[in-house]
Image (cartoon, rainbow, N blue to C red):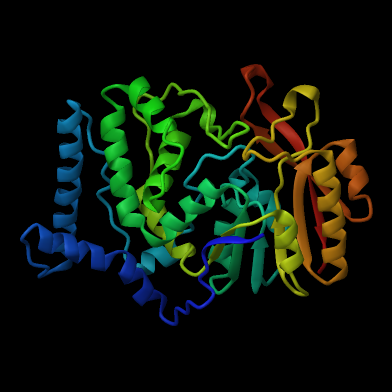
Length: 359
């Protein structure tokens, strides 16, 4: 069943510059009026914005007896700059594809009209393709509700989200352990911006940037060693918000997502990987299980979509089981850097497979 947090199918943005001003310029002017300043010039608005955000962080520090330096980005992107800036993942994500984009480029289609991604994860491939194909219609899915809520907040509430993250940092620095576990235990937030700020904060302060949940779907990763983490980059959040401006985001099972695709669509599929050893079996991004049976179902859906004329690209581990499932398709090998391992000596280059179908 599809649980749509935000269906933007009726949204039309004929003027991207006007949409961008709704994200940046209007909130800036509002804050300037709140501070009793007039928005006589763009420079005045920018200075008022910096002072306002510094004041909010200072209030949070005073309430918790902290002396942290606020995380303020003093550069601001205009509409044209945001369109030229290729957004990057704003989350650290196990198996993220940012480091593989150069190798992936030869596998991407020359044109993309409709784009599907059933396991959005860190979004590196989406952001890369969105920059290349600005008019691409994107259907971004995942069965992790917190992840989809975070993307929605970045798209719809970037300024408020960054303010919340500043407050998190100000409260975290004076007493890191106490505040981390206080936030970690907030499993049932209902405010979309609060949920997103919590996820980004935990992702940037937990051990190895790992997102792992228990059988109840509750995040349970211990605190990391970050003394003064950078929770976000303003320019990147603004660029990501612009890239997501008309993307359709939904919590959805991969089976339903792939069944929605039609001839000519392009789908990039990045599921939890099949383990290459008994000690590498980690798929607990959500409370559901993604094992061998789910891999077989995914392979069958892949073959069905290919027959329907969908252009497909899939990543997985370089395991004999995966080669067997996709032996009828073109399989390529790429080299990725493995970053998650309790034994640092075992982190390094590892082979992964890329399976392609369609033109």
